[in-house]
Image 1 (cartoon, one colour):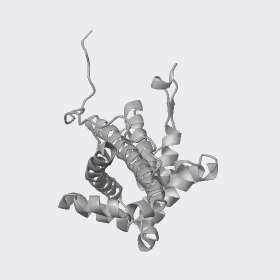
Image 2 (cartoon, rainbow, N blue to C red):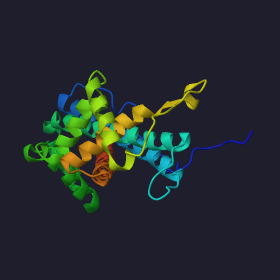
Image 3 (cartoon, rainbow, N blue to C red):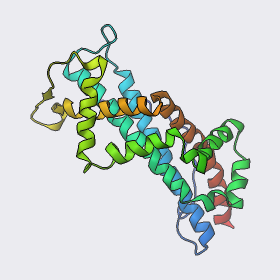
Length: 249
């Protein structure tokens, strides 16, 4: 049997670090910074993985007829998965924003500011966009209101069942979907062959309405997410250099 590999797994060579670099040292300021960097590495990986999933879907994007997808199991699952990933990505952005707010003292520390000064210009520009979104003015902006509402209403709060009902009604009211006369499911003998497309309708309906009401676009969400990872990629690299130096001293 041939050894198959996942697509789009082209990575740079391994860079080694001290094994115990993230273990507590007893120095609170240093330990807080280490924990912050470790958390940012998780953030980077999660965002990257979300974009990988979106790219795999894009690779299998079905062809539309007159701008619309025909009703088939494949097209329904493709569209539903894309909306689910968006929902999770938007909710994740909110959680990341909250994490930054709780670590302002670490962000403003001398160590952090020194690391920021070493970042390349393009990464620094992305970093400034990221930080501005966590300012008091940024927190009140339409983008932060948008990610807050999505996270609280359909992101991680499944007990808010009425929000899913509202999303479903919104889906049926969309001009592109008014022609749909039936809702469907695929009832297979396992999860791989099964999908409930009316659940996807609830999520897509909610997000489409939220995008329109808050004046936010899908492109803004994706661009902001890429800006985050562009900034984190170089911030983490410089931070790891610093941690290696302090660990080996």
